[in-house]
Amino acid sequence: MITVGLMTGTSADALDVALVDFSVQDAGQGSSTGDELVMELLDHREVPFPDDLSRDLLRLLEPMSLPLSLVADVDSRLGIFSADTVQEVLHTHGVEHALVVSHGQTVQHLLDDGLVRGTLQIGQPAWIAEHTGCPVLSDVRARDVAAGGQGAPLASMLDHLLFADAAEPTAALNLGGIANLTVVGPGRAPLAYDTGPANALVDVMARRITGDPCAIDRDGALAAAGLVDQPLLDALLTEPYYRRTAPKSTGKELFNAAYLDRVLAEHPDPGPHDVIATVTRLTAQTVAAECHRHGVTRIVVSGGGTRNPVLMDELRRALGPSVALEPVDVLGLPGSAKEAVLMALLGWLTWHGLPATVPSCTGASRATPAGRLTPGDRPLDLPPPRTHLPHRLRMRQPSETQVSAEGDT
Image 1: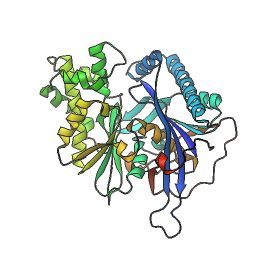
Image 2: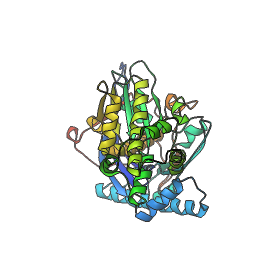
Image 3: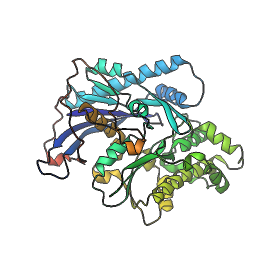
Image 4: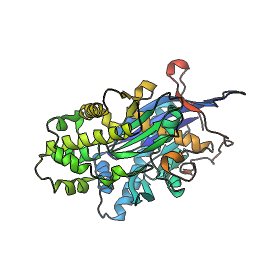
């Protein structure tokens, strides 16, 4: 089954795309482990947004009143951009029909004393279905929220299956706008949550320093030009979110420019390069504290933050020599593709009638399917529901089999 996963994160700079071929290897009668889901990554790419779309997405992420017309306009523009991107990827590989899974851009994640009251992702799936003829799964967080969960982090299902055979306490870490952590290991239920900001506050300062509304701290050059201000770091570490118990989730609704300005108002001395150096260490220190809390000895990391050598050096120092830190690429899964692959996986699970969330990670009352389906140019024809989750997920390398991108859902 061929699936296209689409993901856009809190940086709102590009659409991540993964074209994935899933197959199941039956373990056979008498097996104590269950079936294995085998995944082959046929294509993955990062497609930058036009500047105007990126700017408008970032406007929607700021805590300010905006006209509903802007939300509707960006909803359509992102849907059309996604449709054009999917068409190009399918055409490149000669694929006529596939399941498309579109996360969309999260513009609201409403929290009330730690409980999620609602979550909103935009990027109208009807445009994708109409332009490509493919069925589209979207709105993948809301069902978990309705079941009492955080709707995040969704990566916990992918991590749970990827590390099903972990022999030591292992963490899967993603450094996007927000840092999220999944902890797995023998004899324990998976645990996952957002630890706090990863790039969110770093991006705020990068844009102020450069004057570019879409800037990032490329190669950590801006942080490297400053020094950590310890009083400012200590003030940032008093944020109550860090003391909340999991399951928990957060986003730019909390960790945004206004939030940083409130703290800086009490610490006016640091220069901008010192501030960006300080929030970079904040990310490393808060992530490391959570890894130590769970006795993690191995961390497999992905996300845009891995391309910031200053952040990665800070993280290594905070973790210490007893914790191994390695890229998710060691599993055969490119780090830049992980979140789009996650979307593809959620689509495969939902298409086969399987839960796509892990209640011990999101806090939901039960495991739920993900999202809603928009039909393409033919009626939905779902297969008979599978009765159980695969035991684990394994990456299949192109050398194992003849690569073929022809397929149908």
